[in-house]
Length: 120
Image 1 (tube, rainbow, N blue to C red):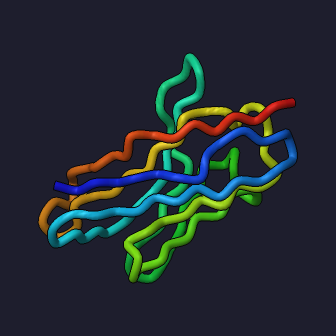
Image 2: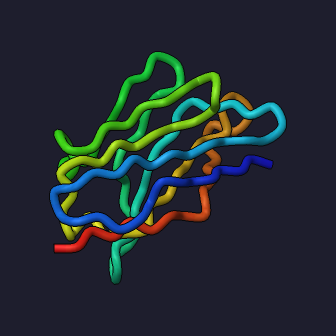
């Protein structure tokens, strides 16, 4: 029903930057918020950042504050994650997520995930 496609991952050296994109598609797509999670090797999936679709209010986990920036393009149904000052501990599979908007505010849709690898 809702498809989320991530792009922009890859390999980068510590201190470098990457920009992830997540494009949402589907019939009558709507959302209250979109966000990013990640799953590091041997760890559970964790929340990274989210953005309110209307108004653009953002929320970040403490470990990425000041380094990562989430934004969205409403016309493109796309959310971005600008990642600066990357650290090896940021290595993970990053997942985009969204809720179902007015018709499914408690449901969550997930992207397939995209690999980000930060070398030391």
